[in-house]
Image (cartoon, rainbow, N blue to C red; front, side, top):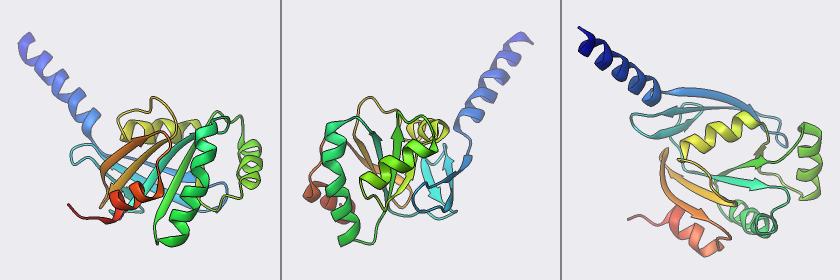
Length: 162
């Protein structure tokens, strides 16, 4: 009997870990509320119930390489119809995040909340340095880059089919 209880507990934990979870976040510079759902079984991240192509970018405001990545991301967004989401860490509050975003003239959806960082970090299997750029195609992570990533590399990853 004890053997079955242990198996049931392990199975329950696995189901909880792999099951879908949803979060809604407000972008500080577009003021839109975006609903993200992660399906642990299929390893898919959907935006407003759609499996789209997009880029998740993890930053800190003090990171020099992150600051060098910003013009590349702006260029990528300008040249392509692509959703880019910045997850900004190391920010005290919304006001500080807005000031930083305005100073950088960012029009990209930016999230500063700790829960956003935790949610998206778990989706990409952890963030161990910045910047981290995670490419999603049809809701599935297809590439992950750490450090300054050239525009040509991002475009190739996003728009070339393998």
